[in-house]
Image (cartoon, rainbow over all chains, first blue to last red; front, side, top):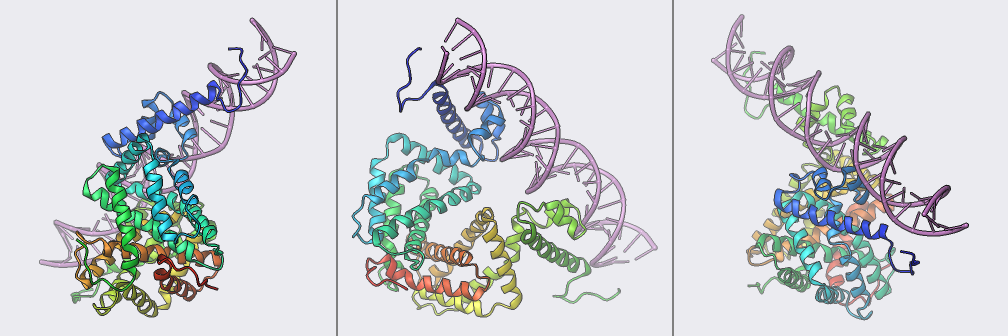
Length: 213
Length: 213
DNA sequence: TGCAAACTGTCAGCCGCTGCCAGACTCTCT
DNA sequence: AGAGAGTCTGGCAGCGGCTGACAGTTTGCA
C-alpha cells in the first residue's frame, strides 16, 4: 500500500492494461476461430471482455492488429537469433539457421499463439494482407542485419534486400502449404520452411533434373 | 437501329459499360494522384463521372479494385509470353525473358497506366496490400505454367511455387527501389527487375565476395 | 411496338474507425 | 488521509466503405 515502486515493477494501472490487452487478444482469436473473422465484430470482441468498442480501438489500431499482436515479439526474437549468427556465415544459411535457433527457443505459449493465428489465416485468407504488410516492415530490419553482417551498403547493393525478400517469400509458400496440409503442428511448419529454404539455390539455378519426392 | 449484331461486335449496352468503367478508372486514378487515396471518396469518384456511388460498387468490388483495374490485362499478357518460352529453358531464365518479351510488347497506354498506378502506390503505401493480394493469385497461375513446362507435379514438388514466390518477391523489391528512386520511367523499372533477377542465383549462393557497384 | 432483361438511383443500414467530452480511476505529493 | 494532476474509460455523434432491396429507366430482341 504505502510502498514505493521500484524501477522495473509495474503499477496497478499498467498491470490492468496488460491484462486487458491479453484478454482482448485471446478472446478475439477465439471468436475468430469460432465464427470467422468477418463474422466477428469489434463490438463483440470488446463486449466479450466487458469493455466498450471505443476502448478496443484504444488498444488496437485496427481489427487486424489483434492477430498481429498474437504473434508479437516473435519478430524480435528472430532478429536476435539472426544477429547472433557468425558474420562470416553465408547469408542464406544464416537466415536458415536463425530460423531454427529461434524456433527451438519459442515457449509453448508462443507456439499455441502461432498455431492459432495461423489457423485464423488459413480460414480467413482476407486477413493475410495485413500480416504480409507487417512482414514487409519486418523485412526491412532483416535486410539491415544482413547488410551489416556482410558489410555491403544497401543503397548501392540490392542483394540484402533481394535475399530477404526471397526469404520471406519462401516462408510464405511454406506457410501456405502448411495451411493447405491441414496440420496444426508448428513443427511441420518449421520443417516445411527449412526444406524450402534448402531448395532455393537449386531452384533458381537451372538444374531441375533431379526431382524431389 | 434495325441491324443485327455480328458475333464479336458489342451492343450499345456493353459499349456504354466499357466506357463508363474506363472513365471510372481514369478519373479515379487522377483523383488519387491529385488528392491522395484516402483523401478521395468513392462518392467523389462516382460523381466525377456522373453516376451514383451504388453504381461505382457495381463496377468495382472495392475501392482498391480501381487500381488493379488500371493494370488489368498485363498479367494475361505476361502469362502468354511465359507460355511461349521454350519448355526446356531453365525456369528462372524463362521468367526473366518472359518479363522482357512482354514488356517490349506493352503499348504506350499500358505504360502510362502502369506508371500512374505505380505512382499511386508510392504515395499511398496502404494500397500496396491489395496489390500484393492480387499478385498472390497471379503467382498461382505462373507456378502452374512453370510446373507444366518443367513437367513436375506441384503437389509433390514445391519448386514451381518456390521459384514463383521468389520471382514475385524480387519484382516487389525492384518496384520499391524504383519508387524510392523517384523515377517515373517504366524502362527504369524493367531494368531494376532484370538486374535483380540476375542477382538472385549469386545472392542465394554463399559467394558474396564480389560486390556490385 | 411491346415485353423481358439489364442497368441505375435512392434509401436504409451495417461495420470499421475516429474525435470529442465528461466522468471515473490511479498515482503522487503533502 | 486528502487534494491535485495525469490517465483511462464510456457514450455519442459522425465519416466512409460497402451491401441489400426496391422502383424506375434504358436497351435488346421479337
